[in-house]
Amino acid sequence: MSELLLRRLHLPAPMGQVLIVSDGQQLLALEFDAPEKRLLRLLRSRFGTGVQLRETAGLAALADAVQAYCTGQLQAFDAVPIDAGGTLFQQRVWAALRAIPVGSTRTYGQIAAQLGNPAAARAVGLANALNPVSLAIPCHRLVGSNGALTGYGGGIERKRWLLEHERRNSDDG
Image 1: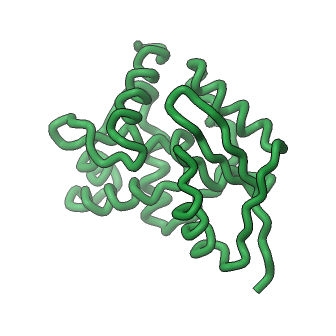
Image 2: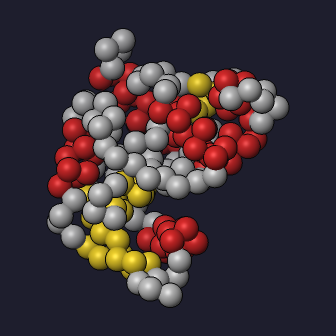
């Protein structure tokens, strides 16, 4: 199997360290707190066992998008090319997440109903959990049916910070 060299960049941010992974053209992953082993396992299951990550400073546009988001430019990821992979259903869920207005939230059930299957709230939750590009695909905007902050891989405190940050900096906030 051939080797695939992907670029990574660790970046400090107000909500914790961010790990960016790119093929040089598109954002492939954006995770918090450098979950390198888990992320490498996911990338290898998607691209093959030859995946290697190399630290680089050559991801300036992606780093700029993270920093712009952190300073209140909440649409900073709108122009970033993303390749999240995923199944057709996951891609549909992730597109629905990207359509949630900044500063707003939706429930898992609302997204399931929007996709035409109101009984698929758990499947929406699983697709949300497998989102490889946090922030760019705003999985933090999903909440429980009662509005409670639930189910965020980056931790509930980070989810709270992200939602408050978006509410403070959105046009409606």
